[in-house]
Image 1 (cartoon, rainbow, N blue to C red):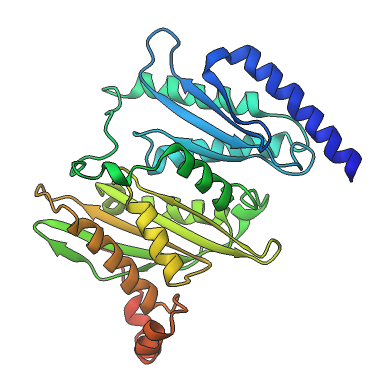
Image 2 (image 1 turned 180 degrees about the vertical axis):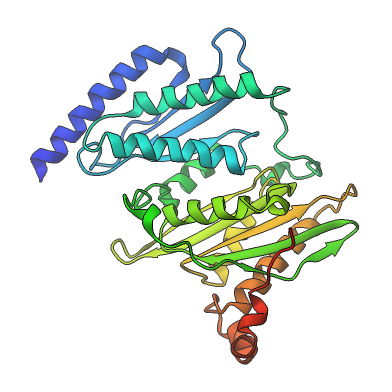
Length: 320
């Protein structure tokens, strides 16, 4: 075991040295001891328009027996683009089990950005939201918070279940919409047991034209891992800064587990200010309680009888 870890470490050192030489100033060592690194990737060296940051943590098991943990950061990176990149990275991992592949990850992301620059009508908006960004600066995570999220969420740990795609997609439940000043919010929920299954549920949801056309599709999931006695969890703002983090925090308070919650928002043209977060959380809280995904005694006790009597009613169909 010790020999394997030493071999992994030497392999990581050689790989990092090569990447640092190839990418120069774009490659950044955040914490050498913790094996945390970051690379800035752009569609063009001369006139970059599409850029994102790939942060990775190299566990002791990489590359022999485990992939890196990773996080993709870019103001423009939203649901479908994020899923596409994640699927590409997963495919590279599965094709290179036991081997170093960070260079392939970086170049695959670069290919995606180059294609994005060719097919997009305009360059990405530098803002992280489509509206209501004023007064929310305190909600933007610092670099230390991003690293902490990366370390605690285990984005890839257990994400690459090789045959995950063969599993049946679970039932997706849709909550009651909440409307306020022409904006509409609606929550969707599905039981999930791995991040791979999360991707499949999200892909299924985006097949619905109404959901795909939402201004924001904010989501969060929490999955309890028996193997590690810890939670695998992650969240996505989809352009609504801090909304995903707030949603995940709500799920942590309610001790929701093995579940994905997506909240769609269709923006109606009138700013809602902080009320938008209230509606997002209320939608999520309601569907978690209705589907019995809360272990909070005071909440679940109030709604247990209602849940038993209205299971069919809660599985609502969204209109196309």
